[in-house]
Image 1 (cartoon, one colour):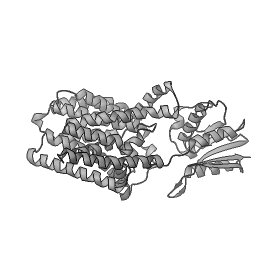
Image 2 (cartoon, rainbow, N blue to C red):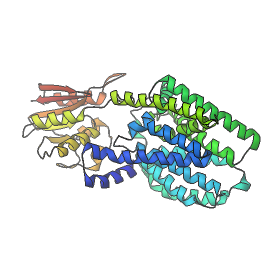
Image 3 (cartoon, rainbow, N blue to C red):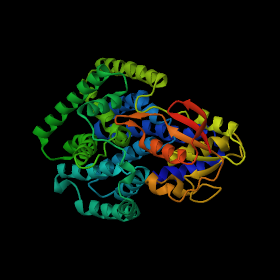
Image 4 (cartoon, rainbow, N blue to C red):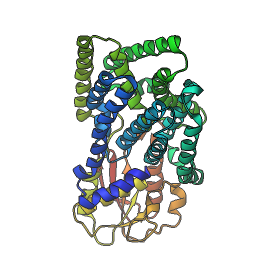
Length: 429
């Protein structure tokens, strides 16, 4: 998510409150609405564009991830803009917008690597065009420019591997159904059924175009959306047979395609009254899904780092030390420490590559056992920030390892506080 964090760094020069930090994602979430309209209008007409924008504006999944200080809304916006540039490139016969597509697609990949699956789907979709109506030579120049821009990302992947995904498990069949339920808007199977019906009408539309025109620009306009939706999901399912890489929020790059396909399907109803009724029904259920999101999240539980960090800072004494079960835990702790204006606090022993300050290496996931080998527990009191979440195989293994390692030298428990998802343990010699 490097592009997002570069933008966030500049954004935070103007404020560091939770609302302001989340606001950057809100900007891109809102920007995706006109992007959906522009793309829908280009592919299927003005009415389809309006329907897509309306569905995107009330979709609970879009609303939820437009409020997280992560790159998901930026990635969805950029892949939508990438597809728009490609659509204009195709409409021009391959004469214009090629470089714009390459630049936006590269930015999308730097916002989230899974956007590369959408770019791959875009490339495959060009097979549905006739060579005579599209200049593949010009497109190849744009593609070559894209490859050059992605060389640093490729080097990073080859150097780091897929270690950051080691925590993922193989997806069960129900999880795939749950993905589409979340995509539809978090209101259960009835809303998913409406989206499925709308997408079925889109299938009928593409079948009609395929039988009447064969390979053509009109067929490509439908095929690119179906590939955009299904290729990233299918590719992750296939790869997960070997190494798990399937996660709903990583696949949000395919969500705009589902919204656009539903809009194109509803547009097949032709009569404005029927289209409006369908949009109102989907919109009403989507708003219920938004309300459900605010009541309780639907993708993962939110650990209460705010209260845990403040409790640790309030009760720590000079000379105390602290260790976190996961590197990103220290990031949350340091954020709330800076937000409250606290300069003092326990000395962080893990993760801590540079004493007294944060370093980029503190947020890189590494084997905990190896990282603890160079840590010395000289402090009389040690705070452990542990994970309370139970995994299918039992307690979090990193938390168990960290606690056992510390109790070997600090066996007495002075305090044990629990917050949502987090345990704050105080040990002494």
